[in-house]
Length: 233
Length: 226
Image (tube, rainbow over the protein chains, first blue to last red):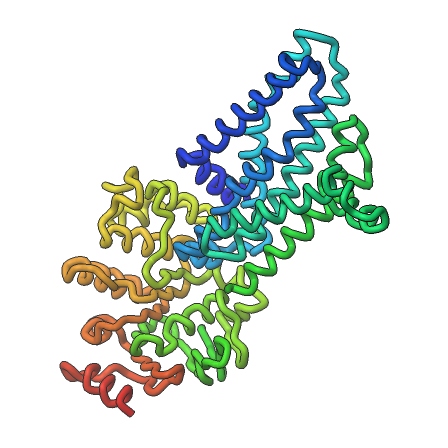
């Protein structure tokens, strides 16, 4: 499987688009934080973490959209599926490759806690748990985006389907929608939102229920992707 | 040995492969002939386990490709139709990727044998069609497979390249069982020692290739007309 992951990662990093997406993510994430730090005067990473899901909403589908759709369009999926690899290995390799690209992009934001450390006193465990939560959030976004990429030959369709679904899921857990929904409906649906679970991590709380939620989310969509590959559509 | 027993495959209402059966012997070079949409590619994909049969059984050297796809793929080399390749990869990157997947240590020797040494550092998208075909063919030889399944290996090549690929298939046929599909009747005459004609998903001829010149063409026209 190392061979597959290596091929997938180099596929992203041999492509100028991969670098453009990573650099754009880095620039925007840093820019918005700097705004909070100097304009609003907030010396905390919370505003940055609160904004991150909305960046990832675009960034992760942009990275994942081609994973299967391009293979299907060029029919290289036939090459891949006639090599002695299981469908599960192929899906996991693509998942870890997207995750690797995401970690590279996320590492561009490490300058933020470092800057804060130079300017003020920071509480390290809170920041670490925030990054851990971001990693789980990114993993769940990657799983859902890979699933949509496996559904179509068209990368743009895959991208749009992922963005719309993730947007809906994020909005479900945000205060914006909560204020419009009756309390009973809200209490039922909100725990399904990744945003709801991510907020625990932002607060520096490592909640095992949230860990279970993200793990189940990743497992479900990767499993559905494997099923889609097995169908050979 | 490759054994297909009463195999059928449907795509929706359409019967792409209709109750076909055949058995290969060691060292055979089987020319798989048929018009477009006859079911050649589907049959090849069924052998590889890429598709699952709706009816019937397939056995590749003791393994069922549905349950033991990995074991089947370890002993079968495959060149798919239109030879899809990762165009943004360099030749050596692609070959080393496939070699690693198929546990082939001497891939450079195979690349040399197929005539790829001079283009190893080139991007696949920069290669001529002939070289691309050689890349696909080299990859299909990795892991020393017992069986080679080649879907239109000479399609779109100029006559000189076609001749080179045919010679290579003939040479490989001394050690391996090869099933290759083609539209070029003279190719079957030149390379194959057994002929299977498939039409509308059914096998309409399975036997020795006619010995006389132009015999394959006559037989093909006769069987496909009926």
